Image: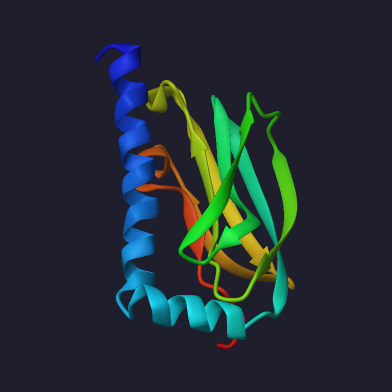
Length: 141
């Protein structure tokens, strides 16, 4: 498969994971989620970690936006092991996704922690096509 086709496939997969997450939140209705997001104004910190090799970029929710449309930050050509702590708000889920131009040569682990507790952890080559790690917000739950 050509490199450009693999890159496009990964981009579609990433969009699919984010879309699925948005649809899960939207199941209650957009208006209901927005009201909950505004009412639950508590913040929480998470730490994203990515280790392994051959990771070309890392995408993650950085705390901007809202629960239905979180801002996604990208780090190109990260040095691994990579770690970033961010502050999220309300019901916004924590999410981190490593991306590799050649997933067959990548071995990757991602983890999301909150106050020492692991919210999500994934490892392996399939991680790059499964959407990385997504953790549920600990706020209100």
